[in-house]
Amino acid sequence: MARLTRYILIALGCLSNYRIVGGLYNDYEELSTDSSSTPEPDPSRSLYKTNATFFMLARNSDLEGAIRSIRGIEDRFNSKHGYPYVLLNEVPFSDDFKRRVSVITPSPVEFGVISQEHWVQSDWIDEEKASQARERMKADNVKYGDSVPYRNMCRYNSGFFYRHELLQKYRWYWRLEPDVKFHCDINEDPFLFMEKNDKTYSFTIATYEIDATIPSLWKHVTDFLNAHPEYVSQNNSMDFLSLTHGRTYSRCHFWSNFEIADMDFWRGDAYSAFFDYLDATGNFYYERWGDAPVHSIAAGLFLRKDQIHFFENIGYQHDAWSHCPLPDSVWEEGRCACNQGNSFDYDVSSCKSIWDRLMSKSK
Ligand SMILES: Nc1nc2c(ncn2[C@@H]2O[C@H](COP(=O)(O)OP(=O)(O)OP(=O)(O)O)[C@@H](O)[C@H]2O)c(=O)[nH]1
Ligand SMILES: [Mg+2]
Image (cartoon, rainbow, N blue to C red; front, side, top):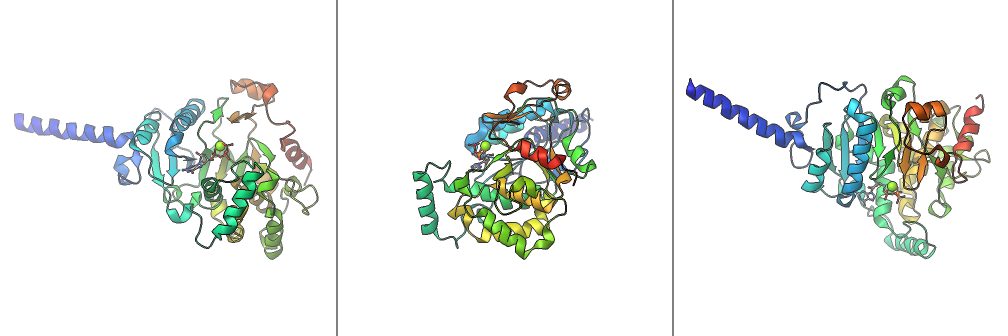
C-alpha cells in the first residue's frame, strides 16, 4: 500500500512538473506541437467563439513592446475570451522572450520560425538594381528607404504570413505589433462580429502612403485588373483608392499594423494571383512597396465595400497616431482612456473622410 501511494505521488509529481514546463509556452520549434503541451483554456473564461488568433511578427529586440501590446489587449479584451497568440520571427525567439511573453497570458502562445524562403530577398532579384534603389531612397530621406529587412517584412506581411504552418488552423487573425495601445474596453467580440456580419477586412486608421515608396504600384495594379477583370467585385471601394475613377491612386490605405481579417481572403484565388503578379515585378525590393497599400488595394477591389469594416469602438494607438471613438456613447461604454480631441480620424493626413464619403453613397 505504502509503495502504491509512493508511485501515485511520484506520478503526480511528474505530471505537475510537466504542466509547469509545458504550460508556460508552446514552442513550435523546440517543443513539439504535441497538444498536451498547449495550455488548457481557463474554464472560468468563455470558450472561443470563432476560429481566430492574434498574430504578431516580432524580433527578439521587440520583447518589451510585445509584452506591452499583449498585456494591453488581454486587459481590454482577451482575458474574457482566451483567444490564442501566434508570434513569428525569422530567427528563433530566445528562451527569455518565450518565457516572458508566455507568463503574461493564460492563453495558448505559439512561437514560430519563418522559413528563409519566405523571408529573404529572392535569388532572381537583381541586387545591383535593388541596392541602387536603396541608395537613392536613402539620399532622399525616405523612411526605411535603405533597409532590406524592412522590405522583407513588408513582403512577408503582404504575401506569406497566412501560409505559415502555425496559422494554417485559423481562419481569422488580429494583427498586433509591439508597443501598440488599446484605449477602450472591447465589449463585443470583433472576430464574432466580423463572422456574423459577413465582413472580411477591417481597420481603425486610414492614411496616405509615402509617394516615393510606390512609384509604379498603381500602374501594375491597373495592368493586373486589365488582365483579370473577373476578380473585381461589384460595389467595390475604387472611389477610396482613386479620386480619378481608377486613373491614379489616391494613396489611401488602411493602416495595416492593425488588421482583423479573414485569412481565407488572402489564401483565395484573387489575392494569390494579385500577390504573385506584384511580387514578380520585384518592386518589393526595387521600390519599397508596403503591405498596407497592397492589402488595401486588394480588399478595396476584390471585396464589396460593405465587407470592409471600420471599428469605431476599438480605440487604438500606434506611434503618435491614435483612433479614439468619437461618439460619446461609444467612448463611455468602452471606458476609453484616450482624448477624443486627439483622434486621428479627421487629421489632414487621414483618409477617413474619403472612406466616409464612399460609405455614404448608396451603391
Ligand atoms: N522578425 C522580424 N520582425 C520585424 C522585422 N522588422 C519589422 N518587424 C515587425 O514587423 C512589424 C512592422 O514593423 P515596424 O518596424 O513596426 O514597421 P512600421 O509599423 O511600418 O513602422 P513604424 O512606424 O516604425 O512602427 C512589427 O510587428 C515589427 O516587430 C524584422 O526584421 N524581423
Ligand atoms: Mg510599427
